[in-house]
Amino acid sequence: MIRKARLDDCLDLAALSLQVWLQTYATQGLRAKISHYALSTFTERTFQQRLKEPGSEIWLAIIEEHLVGFIALDLESTFNGKANGYEITTLYVSGHFQGQGIGRKLLNEAKKQYGLPYWLAVWVKNDQAVNFYTKLGLKLIGEQNFDLNGEPHRNHLFSCTEL
Image (cartoon, rainbow, N blue to C red; front, top):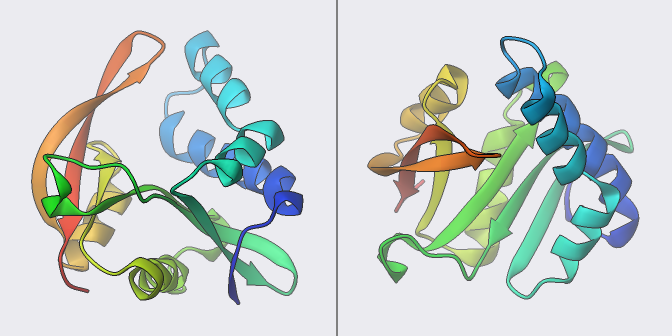
């Protein structure tokens, strides 16, 4: 089931985010900058604040009353003007549920609710995500750095004009 997030979902959103983020980005293990970022970013309070922000939306994938994935959108964010649409800030699916079409269903929900186009950033070393978006037909439109406590990490920017 896909549904819009509520304030009482925020604890599960934080936990799932920690699980997916550490699995994806802490590929060489943990160190202080990684741990600090993860533990200060993925909190129940952070998600509660995000749900209250204008233009911020989160949609959940639920299986048997368990959160297995989510998509977060910033409807006011732009890249190179409005031509690339709104931003998908996060698309996370638990590793236990990847490959089951959940990510695609969440992207389809975003399209259904808010239309096209949209854009998103993907860490260049996240081959699984890069391959997923490329397979879906998203186009590479640029690059930007993600700042991890003073360390730049290169990201590809993709745009979707049709799905």
